[in-house]
Structures are given as C-alpha cells and as structure tokens.
Image 1 (cartoon, rainbow, N blue to C red):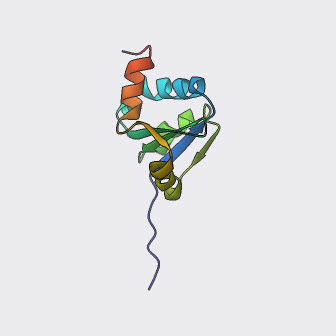
Image 2 (tube, rainbow, N blue to C red):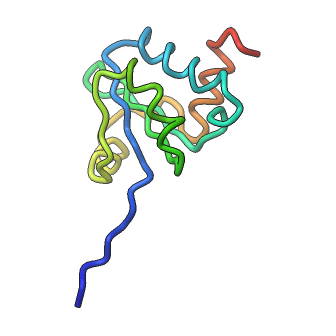
Image 3 (spheres, rainbow, N blue to C red):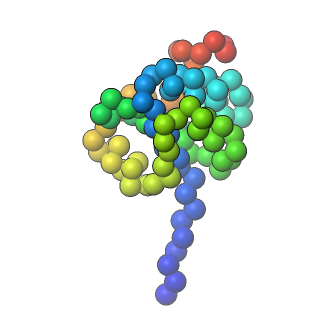
Length: 104
C-alpha cells in the first residue's frame, strides 16, 4: 500500500519581536487577497508564531522578508496549540491588522 501524501498548506512564520510581526501583518492586511486568510498568532519563548492556511504561496511568502524563520510542519502547529500562549485564534491577520495597521 502506497503512503498518502498530504499537501501542506499551513505555514508558520516566526518573528523575534513585535516590530517585525507588525510589519509583516501590515503587509498582508494591506492586500484584500491576504487580509482574511485563516491565521492564528501564538507567543512562545518570547517569539511570535503566525500560522497561515493558504493555497496561494506567492502572496503569503511576501512576508518572509520580515520573518526570522518559517516552517511548514504540522508538528509545530500541534506543539504551539499545546504549549504556546494563544494570542489571537482565527483571523489573526485581520484582527491584528485592524488594531495596529494604518490601512483601515
């Protein structure tokens, strides 16, 4: 029996500080195409983890210049759900962008 391959469409971006996180979210929030992506925001060991579910890698990866690292691992998502502090669950880009963005 052949192994089933699951196409990963979840990406977790890791930010060392809130300034980089805010720049990245402003970039996504300013675009209608990425403003309402399914996303969550976590805090663990003084780093911010933004998880995004998207089939459009081009529009999401434009924020990789702000992130310190990224991962496409489902294991990281499970770890964050278990051990990290949930800052914004569901629509993190939209909620954070609305609160901290200059694009209203």
